[in-house]
Image (cartoon, rainbow, N blue to C red; front, side):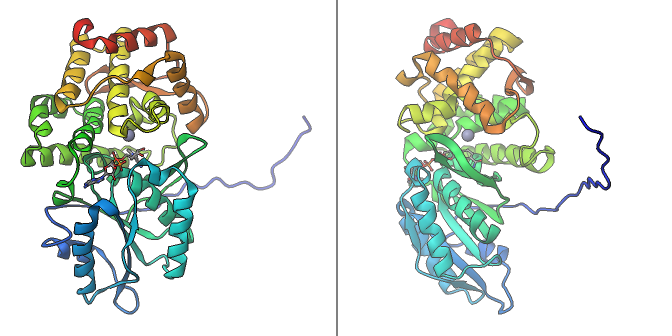
Length: 383
Ligand SMILES: NC(=O)c1ccc[n+]([C@@H]2O[C@H](COP(=O)([O-])OP(=O)(O)OC[C@H]3O[C@@H](n4cnc5c(N)ncnc54)[C@H](O)[C@@H]3O)[C@@H](O)[C@H]2O)c1
Ligand SMILES: [Zn+2]
């Protein structure tokens, strides 16, 4: 190599302050609307310009919110509500994004305008992505309408769509302007979606807080039965643990090797497309969390009774811990390589030594992983 002298170089570390606004409301589309109005800052005219985007299933709530915005002198709705179909299909192609960008352009939204989105995690991801890339970022207000989105993704700083049949392949990091976790928005959610969302709460409690995990185990049946106060508490605790990780964990944009909040996700993300999204994200995560807990028991000393407690808790929540597409296991194991590729560098997967005690590992013992999956298949007898 020839000798090179660098004549000038500067590596400057800098930080940018973000504000993350989380509000807990009972009916943000109705009586609690003033809390939302307060979060909007008007422009030169004193008016905040707003585009309202909602999942079709949330029609009733979205229309009540629309009325409130229209009769609020400090806000201006730039158009009628933009309706989109929800579920994973909303983030499975670029067409949805193109159409959202078209609307943002036609309505002349700028970086001081707001997009308010009402919907489940999939819709939040797709709309969040469009909002993040239009003008390099329009203020996004999320009103999550699933338990999963309220307990996890709503306060997250990621958004993405699926591409090349891979989960979240195209996306950005962007901090939302505000997030409203609202009780009424969950009322119409079908039981299957309602219950499966709590797998992310179980996940984050296993990583961060054993008291929350034990509380979830003790209250799983009440959550399954949709007892309001218990459900609210579970969502708040989970959401707060996710938020603390993002705002105080030192790596909100996942620049480091480890992605602890993706515990159990290497297999979940592989399983979802393998089932043609028959499995909900929450259901796939429950299976992924159970697999990695059992593997942690086989390899890292995670107590076996804790693995059993995890499976029991997810079962009490009403989540089925198996799907035929888990096999052939070879196919599932490809998820590890996809997981590695997503971040680049060497494989880093989070495992558990104990509840609340996570470790990052760089190798997976395939034989033990196969055993873990076999144990999950018969967990009632074998754990
Ligand atoms: N960005 C992140 O950090 C992050 C984190 C976790 C998950 N995610 C993503 O979130 C998505 C899963 O989100 P989800 O679990 O909220 O599911 P979802 O958005 O797919 O919604 C599930 C179903 O419920 C319907 N629905 C939503 N709210 C409803 C309501 N209140 N009443 C009636 N029906 C309603 C939807 O139309 C859909 O059919 C996945 O794509 C996952 O990858 C993203
Ligand atoms: Zn997830």
